[in-house]
View 1 (cartoon, rainbow, N blue to C red):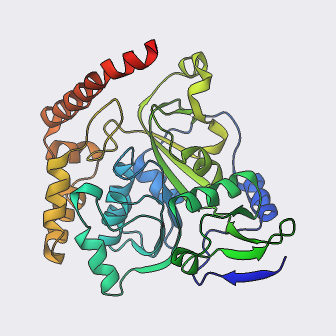
View 2: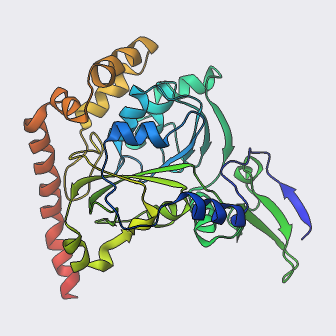
Length: 341
């Protein structure tokens, strides 16, 4: 095909589909076996300096914060981040010095809460590089291409935009219509980290509510670390197989971490901890504040359970559960009317 235009963004995460298939066959264990471990061990084993990493969830929703704190605690360096819908996760990882490169669809802001002082400051100082840009849909299609085992996905949504110019996509002449078509390259992260409501010890994971792009992302990642609110028996998983979004053979590590997404939201379980997110946003206005935050909430503790005690313990967690359940109850009448229709 004739190449008409090329974005100037750095191509990260791309592999020849046949080479990636060979890597999976040689390195992924597809046996149905117990994969339970600890957050510390999973990060030590799978997150290497220089890894290209991606997190499941969306924005402040269903993010594996337990793994993020552990990456910071272990002082991993030169990580490349998939900023598909990155807010609190990318902000902390950039602020801590763990991530120094990022491809961005959405990042550097905490949505309605305002901008991200720490990570924006490090980009402005040249300590973190935005190596490419893409749209949210474009990132999901990168993962889709990887899941499908094809080198790219053709699309028209980036054509004529400045985002295309900053991306790693290419525009070619469509051999059928003879018109320009954009090719979004496949993306295979070295490590994918997800937090789910429940899974079994083998890694069969179920998700309540919107899946985002976790279906595609779990199949694109070379290594998948799964944290979960609760590990349940395989018999329970098999009772509702249609809820199992991520099958065991994709998963490398399983860790039970109750409230593992705090201070982010776990749909139907607990609400955002706005007080704690606000504390981070206030402290992260200065490098000194960033250091104090990490010293208090990350470096001074060894386990996520100790961190939960620092943020208010069971009293705070019960409050966040009550807020989330009240929100669900408020929605219930609307849902009931919808069912009747």
